[in-house]
Length: 117
Image 1 (spheres, rainbow, N blue to C red):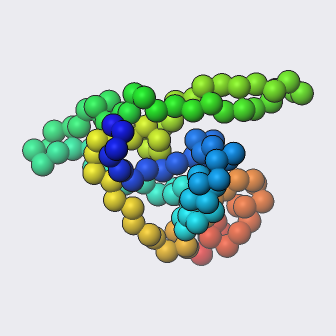
Image 2 (cartoon, rainbow, N blue to C red):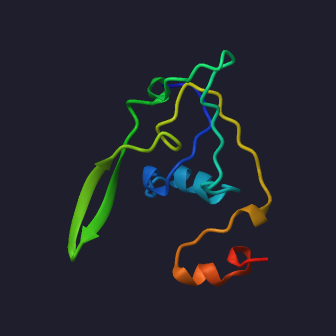
């Protein structure tokens, strides 16, 4: 709801890069989208949470992509772990950099964290 603050993982495509204030906030960010997520999916009675109750049905954003040379716009619903999460307790925890070892290309597999010890 409008007027409430909440912690969120925000994608760049959700930010109006023509808005000076939003660009200022983005440029002062100290962290980026994490890879490690921990989610408690059960309550204190060991019952599963209905995660659909924690989706912000009003969140969404327009993305611009191209197919061939043709520009396309699409309305995208964010995943539950980023912009769509709402009405639950969110805590961000900073973890050591060595836990972040993404594999974006096959060459990343040659880096020491991905090699046998």
